[in-house]
Length: 142
Image (tube, rainbow, N blue to C red; front, top):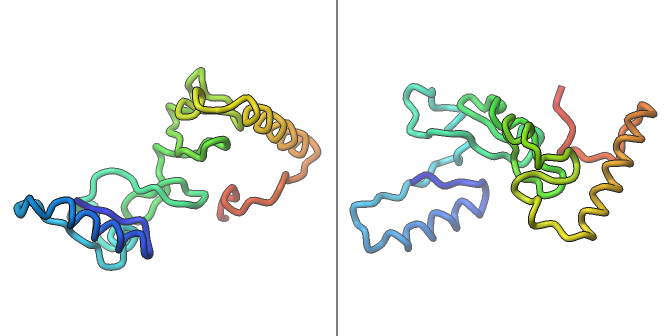
């Protein structure tokens, strides 16, 4: 089992996993020195035991080996911040800035109104050639 979100959460997750598997001595728990991002950066994909992509809390959404941005998860829902795949963006229940398949049935009317208002403001700013509210998580590094 590989667990890691960075910082103290990784330490807590390792401890919790060790307690959960304490009755199963044949189930090892590994703690990655430097965390999962260091592992993905340093270990070649051919030698890696990691399968999948790693969610990150910045504009990359998710990364793969070598810390390359994901080509599967390219966006996140403005409403619930859930990572979205290219397939999620094509679904009928996806409305940019308003909802995705993960939150469409979870939003209150008040939240829907707020998200609609925010999306209108984003679109108006874009039409004027302006950036809406500065949000460093939404900027793409150049």
